[in-house]
Image (cartoon, rainbow, N blue to C red; front, top):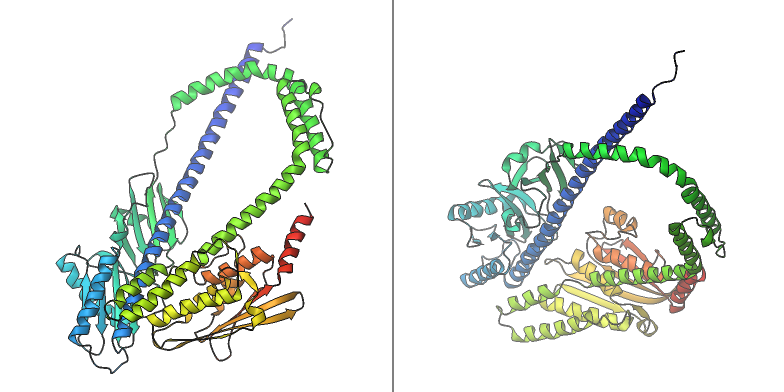
Length: 577
């Protein structure tokens, strides 16, 4: 009789082939998945490098803008800037030219500086010594023509990107009465040190609405830049990442060639064969032990975890019933975890408090204005005027300003101490910009003695100077304090007003919708810091109120609860532990 049973050899071969094919399929899926993850990671790294470069450039362009602003202040103080005024004499021309040369020596990021009198042919110009003669002549002509057509307000910080003799530059010009002040900065000044890409073949471009400008690297890679796309993408093994400028009307585009991805197929095949053979031998042993050594202990652990999740902190496992040394240790660890979980909850709260305190310190550090370099530059400029008494007054005020700003040991101060610091700061600005500032204080005695967070009120005043200060009209600032009470609040209210342009609708939206985890906006960093600091201290987001005055200008209300309100917040946070 013929046997109808199939050969066990064929069955074993079939099973081995299935194991082998499954292993090959598994390895192929892993390879494809790794390749996809690799591409995504490359795109992320490329995007991070592009963002890092633009952030660095934004910071340095803001510094160049500060130099332009200081030059404008010097020009405003020394010359008559109103239209129809007399042309500056030779002595004043030399002083302004010396100031321009000093700026070029101070900052290596400035390629060329210009001051243009629009009512005469007077053009004061200087560039760095590294600029070739042909390029120097071209930049001088370009700045004169560009300034007449594209000058903006002195308070606008944005830069444009242009090409002069096939070289890419950042350019900015703004008007000051009949004068135009302009500067250009060669993109090559910012180098490629921050673009430490994973592959040597890379290129950087800048793009505005219509044009693409070459910066560094392989110029031929511009073929991989698509004008229709605005987000990161891959194209023919090239990663293309976009990063918008905050200080320039342009987008940086970083193109990086993908690194070769090779798989050692021979070694992989040998590994798969050995792996398949081992699987056949070990699978049987695995199933014999998995139930007794793994499934039952895991089941017990799951039940214990469910009990723990229900709040039964007294539940314990029996290590002698674990079935193996490894699970015995795991049972013991679980029991230790159950015993310590209450302490861990308290430690978690303490970590939360430390984290919030660190974030609050970070916010206070950001509240400290970057005025030290400006002050030093102002003192340097004042030496040209030959006014030793003004210099002595300014240095004395600056010493008091620095002393207060570096006094960070205390988290709290009084309204009176904060107003003294503000007054000292305003005196510095009055010396720097004579007859351009008028400030009024109105705070009763009971308000002056109240405790407030360090630098919280000063940040409001500094914000007004940043956005409302001009060199043409007098800036008016009012600070009023009063004891205030409304539903859900009892404490003091501090009101700060100015006569500037006020808040735009966009600013209201950004400040109202700032995320607590990422609360800062570039335009009003000081106000977002204040709002978030109040949230951290009092656990309330309604203590900073912004509006515009009917007659024009900004109005900011700062509500400071009494100290017992702060104690109530701490009590509420700890009551649930």
